[in-house]
Amino acid sequence: MNVYISATLRNFFGKNARLETAATSIREILNWLKDEYPESEKVLFDENGKLRSFIRIYAGEENRTAEDKWDTVLSKDSEVLLLPAIAGGAPENDSIIPEERRKTVSFDDKEIERFGRHLMLRDIGVKGQKRIKAARVVIAGAGALGSAVIQYLAAAGVGTIKVVDFDDVSLENLQSQVIHTTRDLNRPKVASAKDIVRNINRNINFEAENTKLEAENIVDIIDGYDLVIDCTDNYKARYLINDACELCDIPVVFGAIYQFEGQVGIFNYKDGPCLRCFFPAPPPSGLVPTCAEGGAISPLPGIIGSIQANEALKLIIGIGDHLAGKVLTVDSLYLRFRILDVKKDKECPLCGAHPTIKGVQDFDYDDFCGLKQKEEEIPIEGFTPEELAKRIENGDAMTIVDVREPHERAIQKFPNALVIPIGQLARRQNELDPEIDTIFVCKQGMRSVLAINTLREAGYKGPMYNLKGGIDAMKDIMFSHEGAWL
Amino acid sequence: MIREIGIAGGAYTQICEEAIRAYPEEGCGVLFSGEDPHRVDFIKAMKNTAEDKENGDRFHIDPLDLFRTEQEAEREGRQIIGFFHTHPDRRAVLSQTDEQYMIPGMLYIIVSLSGGRVTEIRGYKKEKEIMEVVLRI
Image (cartoon, rainbow over all chains, first blue to last red; front, side, top):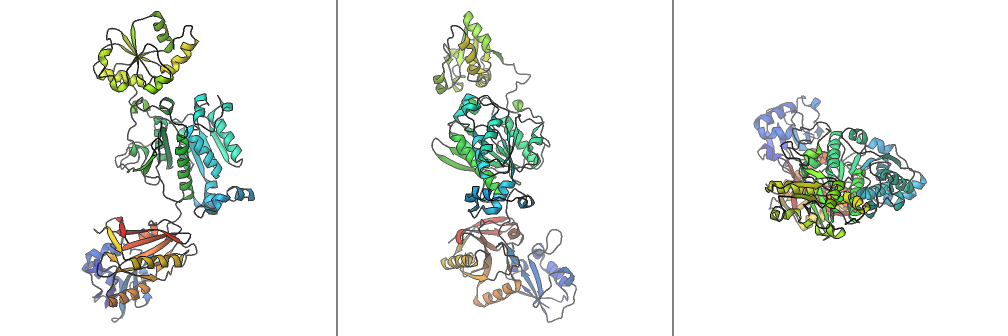
């Protein structure tokens, strides 16, 4: 019998176009081919021994691909054709919203008018807008990033928005957290978030969660939602969110800002990397200040938050290219945008080949971040602002070292303090008198701990103390004091 | 391993023409090389025989059509090196079905169209793994 091999498959059959065989049925032919051309087995059959989906077998013009036709005895002069089925198709929609849920959604006339500018976009259209309405999104943090994300997702028509934040609005928040206004001072941030969403669209199902994210509550808070947007400002929350989302199989749109720079990325999307693949461990606490300590230019969180909202919508609609497995870095000062690739880490303790983290644990982030004092280490002693004030009034002999940066000192000086930035401490330790107490001060009492540890490592032996809570905590004390010298 | 494939200008134009003609359905065809086996010199648009293509998202080339095309090519001394198809209003990336039907060693060119215009064209090959090949037009 004559067997014709398609040109597309010949490489696996010794480049032959036609083969002569004594076999009399399709099954015999396939077995004979496997024996004659061992190479061909993996192109004909899959791992389970089933004929591959792209292989078609014809006897003359008749399709004999189905296995129940393999045993028919064929006449000697028939020609068997081994051909590929060339098939495929555009990708199915890649939305994170299940189709069944989309189909339950409908729009009234008002909504068609409201979302007209989405509906007219070919890539969004009615289907896309239905996915947006069907979406259930958690926004962790109603601060600066959250302000942009909450407003845009509400305006875009996300059906269910849950906002988690434990904080109240303070005056310094108003520089960048644009959903809060002077009227909202001392109110919970989730309350002003709710007002904003209500004013945009009353039909949105808004859920306020005025709590702090902890290992005990995070799974309950995020479980059953389609997407979490990380708008928090600290490592503890970021790692909690990352771990919980990986374990609940929810993608995270990550965002972070510092001074003039920002980052956006998507973690836990499909089999992509998680935050731990990107940052295996956070930097030592105190080294990288939060925005409360380090500051940030006002529109930056608006830029980063808007990109987060845009990424979230693309995941919901299932369109475009997104930042899964990538991190976008934005330098707003010099206008440089870069995209870094984040590879999945096979050794990742959370999403790697052999994960060691199997539940959201009450993880000791202080220890993880290197802040917690180890037992063998000498603990760092500190003074409260009251204690320091008293010592200053008593005229006790001591050296006060201000480790803040020059621009921070420009806002508020600490009188009679020796100014040594952290980076210069080790080399300038001879300026300190080891016979008397040295007190280190910074904005919030974090970098001063780092300063003490740095000097200890450098071999400084004199007594060192930290100002607890930093100059921020000292401010109120000193100003209320008669003869305040700040 | 060949990571770069050339496409003759004429062949490229024909691919785009077929992509636009078929829009909003998927268009498809066969790619042939001439003397240089790593260059697409000729193409032949094929009939899309997929049954469920109302959404413009399935293509299928009838194996017997391909058989006849192969024989024709043999007579003309052309070599089949792969296939092209279009993704109307979708990115030029492999879908799951595309990957499932890939024959190892063959070149797969995907043309993406948006609103009836060609916006992106990419090539892929499956060797041990699926990889993107650079298309030089």
